[in-house]
Length: 301
Image (cartoon, rainbow, N blue to C red; front, top):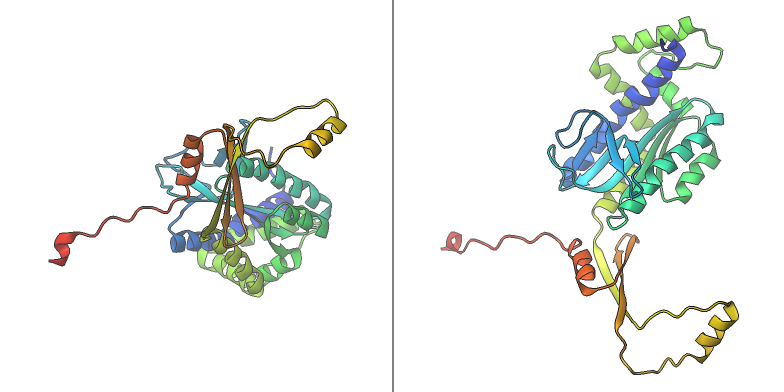
């Protein structure tokens, strides 16, 4: 079934154009911080052209950009950032899109909670404040380009990007043809215009992303818990137990588990619970900085 010109024009703005605008930002971050940027396209480490990650429930989620530590073309690394992009022309669809993004990203955040990845969303078009705030309330960092900003960016090279539900197909077809005739340099100019007009918001989004990537551990809290749990059939019984519990009991009981909290200098924190030393130590080792090779003594002679 052929795609209508209006639908095709929406695809151009929401997929092709947004990728032209956002990919250099993500590429720059990856280069600056020594990360691997995965985006749609072929990669030896995975099959197909889509970026697909599996959550702990076995569900697969397709993503737009993932920044990985220790990743390469041939090896999937640890996720440090999940970035989604989305376009919606009408506000009536914005809440559904926000929920769709939430459904794709949050299970992956839970799956990779020990890495506490940055979660960001880059939106364009018409989104309600309710949809934007829903994402922010879940921890998403939001970079939003309004429909007006998109139209202005295309107008900078002489393309009228405006369209409505009743815009004739012939008019939308002309917009599609105009885009397809543009060379790479001109398409980049549209993207540069968009980013420049909202440079403050873009800078803040990149700052938050960089801050998450470069965060440093500033405190590790370890709580060894001794003894076993006690179960009661009623709340009253539990209250009586607590009120009569001897907190000064000096008898050392077996360790039930280790609770660990890692706190970062940007306010992020990661928690873990482990039933033995081995699990706790293994968990903490994943947060140790890489060992630097010892200096070559012969080089100083």
